[in-house]
Image (cartoon, rainbow, N blue to C red; front, side, top):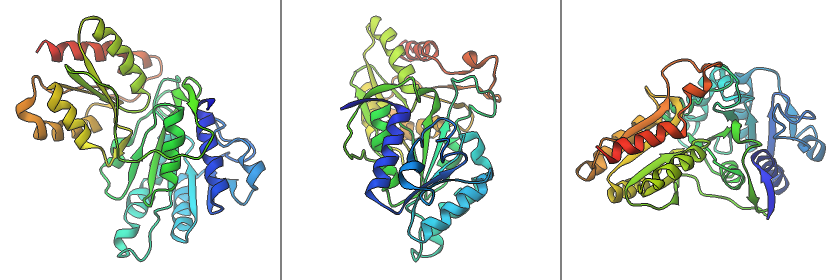
Length: 325
């Protein structure tokens, strides 16, 4: 297996998908010769030509509307939104068109071949317009799938799974991991399943749940907790919609405790949906209230980014509070 960072793994996944299926197209702002603002699409236009990898105008609603049209006619579009923060002009196209296309046509038409990629999350000193985590907005919309990888191996396998899934998929890429996360990635074509969480570490005292860049933060908190004799089970949700209720519930039935963490603000964040579902499923087995460790209910700050982010120290404090409840 080759050593890759997350950007290289995403580029390899796109290359693999385009080589295997001539209907796969990549487009977005500056994705052509420039290779995208983060270089995720480097060399794809040179290899596959301007008809399969090309630049679009700076109009996100148009990018997704164009992608919907392509997908409805049998193409497999992979549209890039340059930053997840810029996805909101395309919100109507995604939630009213992409998500409902199959439903409203009685399955005569669908846009199941659509994948929308977007760098998301904080950690790069990007300030309020380049750091947001908007997954919860879209998790409220039936008809979509939402996927977030945690490392290069996951990124390639999940992106190939997303491109080949028969449903429109939002693929959020934790931008602070683009070059920071490095690992072994098979050079062959492989897919990881959507909708299935992964238990990355087994334990007995408490369940920790997250996705994307928060998984590395959880690992640091677990190291601190286990020095104090607390046995932690760690789950990477991987897919936000549909999320793997069974895996999480089975873990909480065993440990009796749950801490959920994400970068997005607390109010309306997806951790609230998880907490509500798990307390209904596991109420009589809970040893303490389900805890949420999240971003703050403020716009994402620039100077105070470190204070805003839910770091390992905040998660460690939540672990202790839950165990000592």
